[in-house]
Length: 351
Length: 111
Ligand code: SF4
Ligand code: SF4
Image (tube, rainbow over all chains, first blue to last red; front, side, top):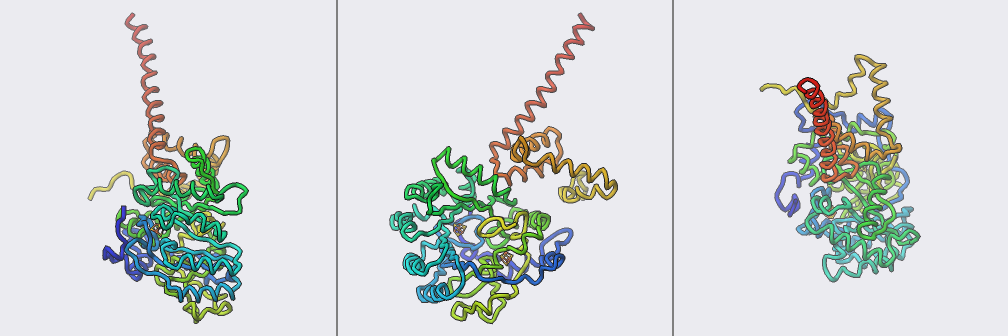
């Protein structure tokens, strides 16, 4: 179980260039993997183009109360990158003036940004159709100052999307740390108590499942059935949808894959499961990711690999929807993670 | 370095068996695919059965494949081990129940 971010522990994988080098050149003993570019070219899908902007995903900082083993952000309590109120103001301008209908706040634990509540209050006034906060659940129980988060979310009609690696304690704690399961259960019960996740409730509560090791997620629908049954029977918990997400081979998950000698096999799995029909709907085609310091990326993964958008507009202060639409998306080998099997995005399967 | 008989990378080449007998190979894979679809049994239940059988058959490729497959379906390690015990119980039961045949034969031959 990780206790520090890669950055804090001085790992060479904290350097995004090193990660890209591993992904591009491979560290394979035998055989060679086709490039993602070659793969999508087979079906004339290269270059991958951005369509109309629908989702703005804002990463308000890499600080987190957890240090999950698979974290693609390399987030943790030791990460200090935090979006300032000034950058948030620039984001609000863009939200007001862009055609995006969904706002997706992520981190780290977004709630740990000192201006988080201010931002939610301001953003909620702008009339976005779907306002998502990616909450890791345990933050709600981490400290007294967060205990009222369920009420706060409710007040601003926030759509809560939370990670839950498994319905059993063992698997959850293995991936996310000791005690995470019990705190997550308590947080889910509190969200349920204010109305989140109830079958007819407008207060949306979705869970995100991603595998606890070097394997791909199973069928989203049957996983959802199993999660619902177990959480209801064991803890009386209800939620709306389960999104099954594939772990992308970057940051701490890449570190884990290499250390456990699963990297080669995992990359083969991704390539073998490559599904050309998932390509058209990968999330970068309708999403823009904004980093804590205001730079623009095709997705949160490209943000972590420091691969900025291929556009003249590179920063939120230069935002220009027309310029960004139709841009060529920056791809690399990690993109196989979005197109394996039924595909994977922040909203689960795409094909 | 001596090469082991089994190489885990060979599992990836399983599909290649169609190259030397296309029709039969394809028929097998069609059948195989159908067997593991959701049916009266869930795909999860079928995967656990396959895991148990892969142990009684002692096929390292199948053990690898169905260990991964059950993990992908959210199966816990306790469930996986119990499934293997089911296989082991049947295997040992099947061995022991033949003891009755041995006993019958002894009784016949040796009064
Ligand atoms: S996966 Fe989420 S909860 Fe875990 S360390 Fe990363 S940002 Fe925090
Ligand atoms: S990793 Fe990012 S850029 Fe690559 S396919 Fe996925 S969403 Fe698109």
